[in-house]
Amino acid sequence: MSARLASVRMLALAALLPSLGACSLLSSMTTSAAPAGSEPAAPGGTPGQETELASAPATAEPAAESAPAPPKPVSVTLRNTCSETVKVFFGDKPKFGSGTYSSLSSNSSTSHSFMPGDMFWIVDDSQNGVSSFTVADGTRKIEVQSGCASLSGG
Image 1 (cartoon, rainbow, N blue to C red):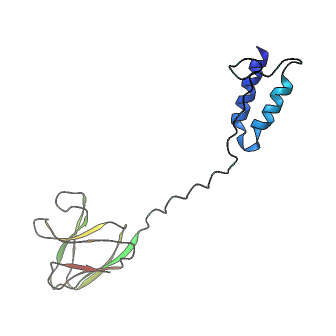
Image 2 (cartoon, helix red, strand yellow; image 1 turned 90 degrees about the vertical axis):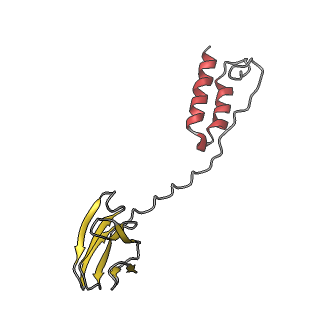
Image 3 (cartoon, rainbow, N blue to C red; image 1 turned 180 degrees about the vertical axis):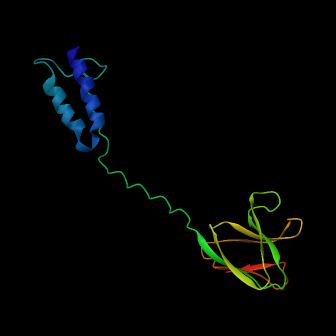
């Protein structure tokens, strides 16, 4: 029974040390650890039955790929070239989503910080979306056009 216990211990060690060639080391240790005059037994087998312990390939695991960098805020100049004050919305869905309502005075500029993918809207008096613009990494300016109902950006 002690030879079987030694084999189990050797197999556990082999599972822990595959990159060091532990299987071939254990194979020689199992043979030398057996009592004199006895034949090595396969785990769960009978004396005289030889088995080969398979060793895991000694390959290094590839380095984990680094996660993509999180998006960074984008500072955007908001310019109103319209002759009237326009109502605007910062968020995904005016009237039905969460966000912030504000206004841009006629012929004015201001700066606002967005995350890539954020949306900017012109809204009407009932808070319905009239025109929208989705901010990208390279967006530096969003302009309310002279007709007060469209946006352009870049």
